[in-house]
Image (cartoon, rainbow, N blue to C red; front, top):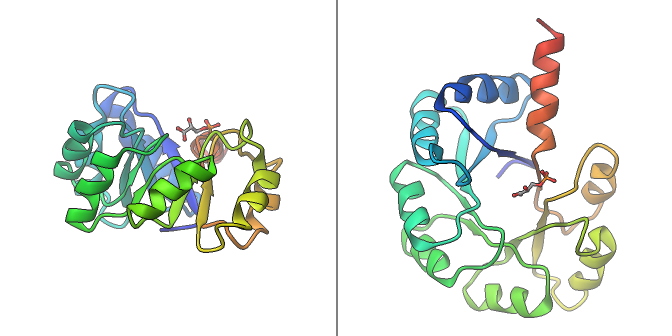
Length: 185
Ligand code: 3PG
């Protein structure tokens, strides 16, 4: 996984090209396409086919059905806002990385029991940000985090400086990439 994981919401399939092209032009080759819109699975399938140089995953996957749909569409990683044991089991069986949202010691322990050592920390700004991550890293030195939610240019560097950060997630990567593309027109 790359260091930056843009959280992508595709409302219409026709927006996919613009968003993925903008991300690529910004040097980002990963997209977490979220199951928040009806066309998510279709957008993933389209992205996998037309952007073979990008790593296309599925986000906001909250149940087994969405996970199966995402994998059938070709997603190569799965992200959830929380921890779903059924999603974890499907991903483990197919050898697909799964990044569940975990913000408490109990949730992290549940992830570890499922064999997961990299978790999404969401919403990072609400659950204590970097201070919380540092505190959680004391009992869980084997765990790497993907802080997401409220991360932007103002605080990304402090997260990146911490060695337990696997990657940074956020919708702001998409916003920035689109703005950059617009400005360069
Ligand atoms: C997510 O699902 O990961 C979040 O909606 C992203 O949060 P952000 O919009 O604050 O980056």
